[in-house]
Image (tube, rainbow, N blue to C red):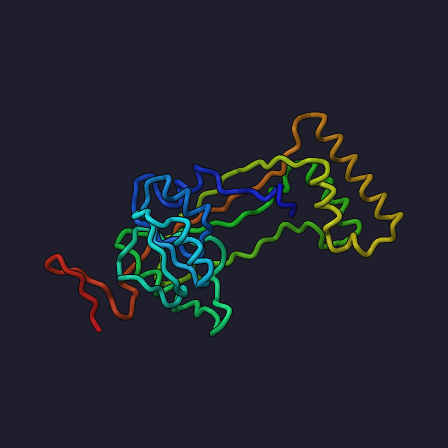
Length: 258
């Protein structure tokens, strides 16, 4: 997908994901831009990244800002106290460090559960192209005349296992529609970047680009051409009863049986 057409998370979607009241958020693998948005909304942010260089860059960027704490850590070995946050926000799949074993999914789910306060949740999203718009369907049909798998729009859910985890039995979902402007050059880049196009003879390739341009022109005559997407957002609410070492509270203090 061309960089100019990559959709960003709408403000309404981010508000739904983390809530509209300021809370403490663990930003796990989130970009500096996302962290800046969370701080701008009034949240306190604990940034955790498995890469030392990325974590150092984020710490330097927010140096002196007491609302942002930064640590190096894996999703399956979170370096935080139990029940420290109301929300854990995930931006993309769990990142494994360059050295060492890959992230243990089950352990990561348990670690996220322990880091959340009672009533808290872990949240994330994925972007799916909406193929119901007529000009998009025409473009897909054109591309599939060259490659049957082109522009499938299929997106694998990076957190399907988490959403099926016993630690998060109640799931909320909400979709947000987003329209992203696309230029003629952006569409041509999208078309020519498809795997099957590179195998075409030059004459066939020029013909394909010409037909794609006609689709752009016919659709753009009606209004500004925009690619439709769905932001599929989810919130998974924690249940501490499922922890093998349950968390409880007594006399105002935290108790973790071992």
